[in-house]
Length: 287
Length: 305
Image (cartoon, rainbow over all chains, first blue to last red; front, side, top):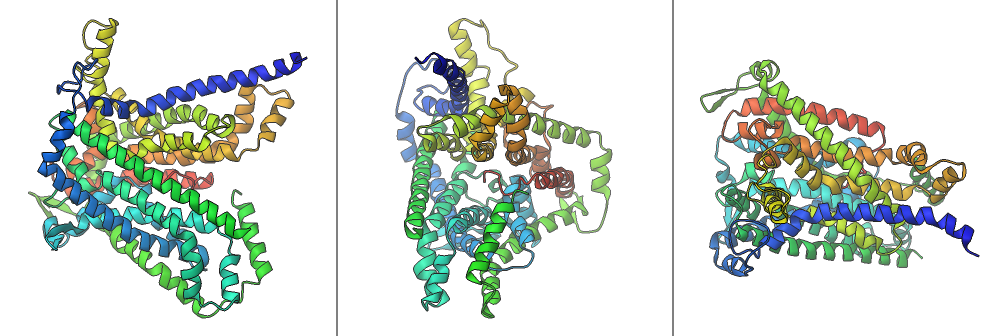
């Protein structure tokens, strides 16, 4: 009975399996370095040979007493928090203006705002270095101490700049999907623009803002290409890793990288869940 | 005209609701919203870029920069036989990496867009996730893999395929290309997936019904429709490779320097900022040309980030 069906089904199935197999290989290629890093963080010796002779958790134990590393993590968190937080405000303002208002030179403005992630990081890094050096002061001059902790502003400013792009695109995408009549209905019912923003727009775009913020945080936490030119006296975590990498990869760095990878994974999951929730609430409200 | 349908919905929506009744304060409100991010970008991105370009016209006199107009740096960039070769090599490697990524991204993007029925979201997330693990560490992991006493060599000896380490693996153009292709691959897969996902299945069926084989359907239907995604992904991969200095430092050999590394060195150990700034100019020209081409293909705004 299914002879003809079978003939028809076969090539499609075959191509699906073939493509699936190729895709699996590409996934393996994508994850190979990450797998190696995680695997060799449990390697007892410093030489990364196959197969691993003895497994150990010592490198993770060492992380806890490495003060240089802990300070770098603290600085990275500080920078990433300030960058993501500022970008959530600035990026959202930009997204609202570009989506909801008639503005002259819109394509030009959009172009300006996506430029920091279109041009190579090295250009951003040296441009800001050149900019801050016009004052003939060393970069550390632009760091301030607040409540006993340092804030290296050139570095933070660079991170805010590319974070704005990330938040703006996430929020823009959300605004684009959001039916405009929600704002209009609110205005028709007599709400002031501020009230409409607080009660209608903000709750709807907040998950996208937060999601963009989390992405910005993750990117900032990992950034090295721009930061290398703008570091003050203290190292962020990736800068510390860069410094130590040049002495050779130790399993300890593999252990740090594993920890970062797990933290990033959690960040991405949180961000995705938030976007998912935004989709859901958006649909529920528009029907 | 990729914007066509979207534009027409906005106009009809505007007509329906009669939006043109704009309160006078509305324009001001828009400007007030836009001012902070735009001023930020002007002060902390555009102005630094212009200052950087200004440096290209200055000169360096034993570690101090002399702020007097000169074209000397550009003369060096063009006439010195090192820099044009480095630029050509960088463009070649960036193009090679881009082509490799297009070839690698197509099957997986097509599989995700057209073949997968279950767990599509999860599989897509798995493509994105490597981007958020440390780039530095992923690049370095290749050194662990390819090194003389590295994972691959010891693996090959362990299985008995080779009896002594292959020294040529690390510190070579091939090692750089492999690393670049791997670290940037998600930037190609994502925009490609987005365009392939938009192609209606009926088009593919129609092509098959009209007697096209798979290759012909790919060549005449799928590829032309996927082109904006290919261009968007290529823009990311090409631009990221053009400016990178991490991978050349970690995996390139002494004769494999790329322009990004030389620019970075001029702002670091070589300490010749004006020359470094002048080297940025050809880099920007190449990337902006690519942007113009991408724009013609309607690819802008489609790249992954």
